[in-house]
Structure formats: structure tokens, C-alpha cells
Amino acid sequence: MQSLGDAFRAAFGLVVSLDPDLIEIVSLSLSVSGVSLLLASLVGLPAGAGLALVRFPGRRAAIVVVNAAMGLPPVVVGLLVYLLLSRSGPLGELGWLFTARAMVIAQFLLITPIVAALSRQVVEDLWVEYADQLSSLGAGPLRAIPTLLWDARFSLLTTVLAGFGRAIGEVGAVIIVGGNIAHATRVMTTAITLETRKGDLALALGLGLVLLTLSLGINALAAGVREFGARWEG
Amino acid sequence: MPGARAESILPLELRGVSFQAGRQILLRKLTATLSAGAPTVVLGPNGAGKSLLLRIAHGLLAPTRGDVCYGGRPPGLTADVRRRQAMVFERPVLLRRTAARNISYALSVAGVPRSERPGRVADVLARTGLKALADRNARVLSAGEKQRLALARAWALVPELLFLDEPTAALDPSATAAIELLIGAISAAGTKIVMTTHDLGQARRLAGEVVFLNGGALVEQSPAERFFAEPQSEAARAFLKGELVWD
Image (cartoon, rainbow over all chains, first blue to last red):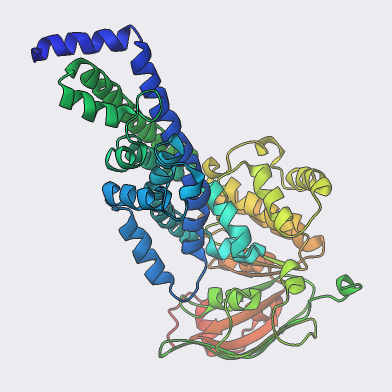
């Protein structure tokens, strides 16, 4: 086992020299989580706004379920997607198990509830302010949903970033459905798990540094967006 | 509906309108007819039900009892009736977009074709003296500019009936004067104004007719001149003298 100091030096070396393996893993991570986030936003934002505005029987129950689903254990989601995509599963025909697509599905299931639940709250708060005015202008719920999503854009961007943070740092689901296959489904978190187990601390630490920097960057970005939004929204 | 435009939504008739929240009766059996012409100013002490009356007349709230009828139509609010009236609130809600986009949004909801919107936006901005602010973020305008923009947004819809709930309550004297000028212009251009205010001077300057409410009931409805010169009810006399009115 290397000494901690050596490991850190090697890790920095990998990051600074833009080691191709490291770059490949980081880019796959970013694209898997990016696509998941895009799909989760396409579904979660309108769903959250719909939950905020549209009154229907079972709405309260739906809100409780969505809120609870924010804390879905990644390994359970991974297991469910595994069962769905496994050869004998209902979607086994697709042959998506152990591909990046499987990882996207798992992360999509993990973060859609986060995006939906947080955006429901944001949109509902804005609706309190807007309800009379939009009704007066004659905008029904279907018209109000895109209006509120657009007007809450800065707050929603921070919820979307929260979803991205969850996706990029998650290991339980992607390791089950992706399988951590080198050059195919190896992302930062699964690589860190594997390299740590193998004792190759340099790559693990290097990836860890990138991951930490990313989540720091995401949070800084979220804070910046919040601040800019607060100023813009007067 | 062909020809629908020709039939005015005026007069606005309130027939025995009551509104109850829980066990509290906030408006009781209110009957009034508001006809086209000079502005109607709704006066009355705090809690008399002025804003509530405006909300019900505009169709934001349904009365617990009684009917609201527009231009002799059967009671109720159709999409056509809604489209021909507008309301500006005490604290206007401006969308998080530019001043011009706030107006074109209202036009778009009202079904104005896309090609007509820029012209109408520019026109109303010019008429309200907001041209220079067209591309400014509506949320960071001053209180007076915000209220002017809210009026411009309403005016762009060319409503037959415009409700204003305390349009100058939060404004300083010069901004108030600008809003009053604008209200006069909107009225002169043919829109019936129905407004509430706490400012008796403003009521004298703008009103053609006064509706005086007290304790949720209509106490009197008279031409403004007569109301201010010789109010018919004890409550109105006391209110004009600046005394506290209890119901």
C-alpha cells in the first residue's frame, strides 16, 4: 500500500496531466448524469408544476409519494432497473443491461422525484403570488404551468443542480445496472469503489478530487444563480 | 361567437350579492348597477368589503348568494366576458420578464395574434409614458413605474371594464398624480373604471359616481358631486368628516 502522501501526489499528477483514463471516466460520468438530468427535468418540472396547480383526487397522496421518493435508496432503484432489464425481465429484449443507457434509466428514476418534489414547492410558492393576477388575465392551469416554470427559472435551476449533484455522486444504482465495465460503464463513483478495493489509491483519489471539485462547483453555481435571481426578481 | 363583440358587458349588475366566509358575512345582499361612463369609486371604511366587491364583480370570487350579470347576459362569467375586463391590484404582480414582455404576455393569453402584439405593446407603452422602460426588468422598476406598467398591461387589452383596487395606496404624491392622470386617460378612452381608494381627495378628483359601503352593505350609490356635497346617510357623513364609522 502506498503512503497517503504518495497517493495524493500521484492523484494530482493524474488530474494535472489530464490522464486519458481519468478523462474518459469523468466524461462518461458527466454525460450519463447530464442525460439523466435532462430527462428528469423534462418530466419532473412539468410534473412538479402540475402537482402544484392542478387539483385532482389523490393529489395529497401523490405529493407524499413524490416527497418520499426523494429519498429512494439507490441500491433498491438499481435492483429494480436490473430486474427490468435483465435477460428474463420485461425489458430484457432491449439488451440495455450493463450499458450507459441502463445507468441513465437508474439515475433518471432517482432524480426525477427530487426535481418534481422541489419544483412543486417552488411553483406552489410562486402561485400564491401569481394566482389572482393570472386568473384575472384569463390564464388557466395549462397556461399557468409554463408561465410559472419560466418565472421561477432561477429557483428551479438550483433544484435541477441539486438533482445533478445527487446523480453524479451516486454509486449504488449505477454499479448494479452498469457493472463498472472499463471503457464502457465505468464512472467516477464506481471507479473509486473498485480502485480503492484494488489498492490503487492514486486513481481513486484523483477521481475523488474531481468529484469533490465538481460538487463544490455545482454548489457555487447554485449559490450564484440564487443570488443573481434574487437581484433580478427584485 | 360572431357578433359577440358588439354586445357590451355593461351595465354590470350585482343582484342581491352576499359573501360569507365561515360564519362571517362580509357582503350582504348588495344590489347595484354600474353603467358605462365616468369612473365609479367604491368608498367605505376598512373592512367594509370594497376589495371583496371588486373581486366578485371581476369574477375572481363567486358570491355565496346572488348573481353578477354582465350587459344583460345570464348570470356568470364566460370566457368572452372575462376577456373584456381587467383588474389591477393594490400590489401589482409583474411577471419576471421585461416591461414589454409583461404586456405581450397578457395579449397572448387574451388570444391576440402574435403579429399584432408588438404594435400594441409599443402603442400602449407610448401612451403610458413607459417607452424608455420597455426592455427593463419589470421586477426592479420603482413602485410608481410598476403600477403604471400594470395599468398599461390592463389597458393594452382594451377592456370595457377595468377594476382598480387601491391603485395608489403604496405610492408617493408625484407617482399618485401620474397614476391619476393615466386613470383619467383610460376612462376618457372609453373604459369604465371601477375602483376603490382610501384617498378622499383622489375620489373627488376621479369619481363620476360613488358607491358607499359600510359593514358589507351598500349604504348609498350617488353621483359624486351629490355624495360629497350632501351625503344621504349618517355613516357617509361621518366617513367624510373623517370620523370613525362603526357598523
